[in-house]
Image: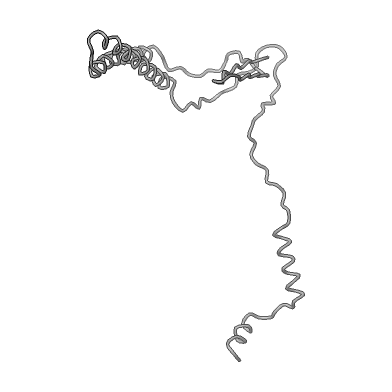
Length: 168
């Protein structure tokens, strides 16, 4: 017995050509059989709880998912405003003082640093008073709830002015 015949005998009984064709057809049909689509997760939620005909709707808990605390966002916006404002004031001071005393750029930067320091100190004092006034409050949802069921948005213009109108 040759090595090829010996390895073929180890495989056991062989299929006829008709059986092999039928098995191949079955495998191909199983692979290309259309499967029902997999239902995806919903991308929106509709609250179907009935609203009362008269009176207020029952309150609903609404989680707060802000990434940045409101005071931090306010401080960031104020810092940007202060930086832009002091840049304008510094440039204005440089232009005015250049005509009077031929002031150097270093002198104008020093004037801008003075204005920036004063504005930043005012921001820090204001933030400290704001944080001292605010208190930690618990979310108690027992007030009236307004349901706006229709929203109309108009966006137009080069700089995309948006006007959103809420209708009951």
